[in-house]
Structures are given as structure tokens and as C-alpha cells.
Image 1 (cartoon, rainbow, N blue to C red):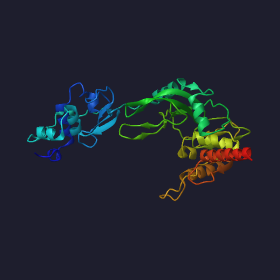
Image 2: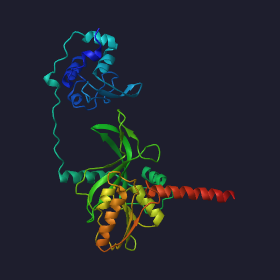
Image 3: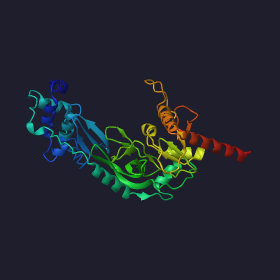
Image 4: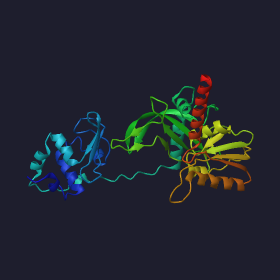
Length: 357
């Protein structure tokens, strides 16, 4: 008897598609199935947990629930074997001597070009996301998360942050619903360019841990669509005080810098947008504190990426006539959130020692 690996050795992806079509029931072989979208599983019977992606060209598939409630994946032979309750030897015997399946025209995946979203539609989407989120209140999921990430946080309740329960989609598949921090990203002229989303764990004060069926870890933090170019903007956590403002890359880092230095601080989402930050006119700001992430050296450039972008911002803003103070953490490979956590932990240890003395 010829081995299965020999029988299918020279099959093309289209022939694997045709083989799948011969064995799977019609209610599974829908347009969504051929597009690689979640649908009913022919093995376990789930309605939205099976995906046929043929990504290696061998009839490849994945189900989120097939292995005693855990994800399972395989090629077309494994799919047919499980569907029919056959051994590999029995399947090889059934296929032996047959010509490989001929590609059938109806298995071709139709292209579905997606029309680009207009600027007006983007703006309406952003407005809708923001309107459907609620202002933060003490004890909600967002406030608990911030208290855990920046212990001892004392700051004005931010009008630029809201909380919503939102669906998390990845490649068209619903991964779950999560409490989500929605951040309003504002341009120097006061217009909203986009909203940024941070999915939170429903059970504990931490970012959500979201994993696909094939093991890919998805980001908890994501931008929504941008109605306007984002260069120059920031999330305005608090108002400048006495003409002084700070900027940082991330939410937690901004709050930690505020606790360490007492400076009202905004955040720009990432180092590239920090580099492009523009001090708004009409707010009386004359002094800018830049709280850089002290990244490890990039071997390609020989520079610390976070420091390089912070230095570029400092140089530009000084040339505009403002007073600039550039700060970096004491330890390479950390940010000010790390530094605040270390300081807070050491303070706690010192307090315990004093209590025991």
C-alpha cells in the first residue's frame, strides 16, 4: 500500500481544495468557508469556530474547540480522517490508485475588494465609538487597571479617557468582548483624529490576553481608524499648569511621570508620534517636559529608538523658543512606569522595615 505522503506529494493547493469538496457536506462548503471565514465545524458541530485557510496549500484548517474544548489544527487528510472516523491506513487505501482530484472551478475564492472608508465615514465611526463609551468613575475596570499599573496614582479624572465594552475582531473573527479604555487623540487645533483602544481583562486589573486558535498573541492596544492625520496630536490626560506640560509615549508612562515629577502630562501613543508632537497654541505653554522611554540600543542604528525620537522633539521645540526638559529613566531598557513601580516597591519595603524597627 502506498503511503499517504507519496500519494499527495505533488498535489497543488487547488487539488487539495477539490479533495475537501468531495468529502465535506454542502452546508459547510459555503462562500465564507472558501474565504477563510469562521463557520460550522464538520467535526465537532460548532457553528462559528472552524476556519479553512489552506495556508500551506495542503487543505489546512483550524477549529477553536475540537480537542476536548481546546484548539486543534491539521491538513486536509487529518480533516477527512476525523470526519469519516478512518485511520490513515484506511484513508490511504481509499485514495490509492485514484488520480489526484481535479480542481473544480467553483472552489476558486472570489476576490472581494473592500471599498475604502471615506473621511466622513471615519469621522462618524470615531464619534460613535466615543459616544458609546462612558466617563470613568471610581472603581470601574479602567480605574482599577490604572491603579494597578501606577500604584498610588493621584491625578484628575481624565475627560480624554472613557470606558466601553467592545467586541474584539481579528481577521473578521470575533475573539471576545472586553472592557475597553477608549482614549481621545486630539490634534493641536482641538480636532479629534482617532480613538485608541486598550482591551482589559474582565477578571483582573490587567490588559486582556487574547490568543488566536493557532497561538498568535494579539495586541490589547489598538488604534481605530483615523479621520485625520495623527501627526502633532496627543491624548490630553490633564490640563497644563502655569505654562508647563509634559509628554510621554504611553498612558501608563504618562501617569507615572506625573507621579514622579508632578508635571501634568499627555501621551502620544508611540515614539514616532512623540517625535511629531506639536505644542498647541493658545494654551500659554512655555515649558515642555519630555519623558522618554530608555529603549535598548538598536543594533542597526546604534541608537536607543525612544531616546532618538525624544531628542528630535526636544531639538525642534527648543528651536521654536520653548524651554525644554528631557528626562529618561535611570535604567536602560525601562520606562518611567517601570521606574515608578520600582520606587513604589522600595518605598513599601522601607516602610515595612521602619514598622519593624
